[in-house]
Length: 98
Image 1: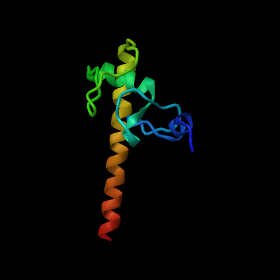
Image 2: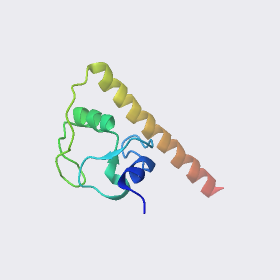
Image 3: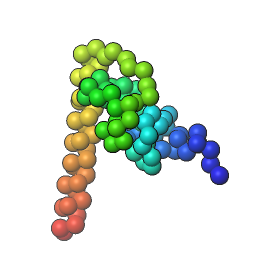
Image 4: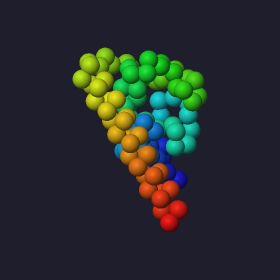
């Protein structure tokens, strides 16, 4: 049986979709449970939320202050992920129609 630590390192972050170094910082389960603490801290700072939008539990992390440059970089990262997903969906639709 796998230990919780090995399960955690094989999971991906629900915010940036990158694997490794993720933790469960709320009461969510399954693939939505894991985030990088840094990603979650950025999300808390940008969104203003202090609790999980899925399970509504207050996040179990210390809040870090971000400067404006870090906020801009985070927003650009989010836009990059959204653009990549949109391109992927477009490609899939085109392939299905052909």
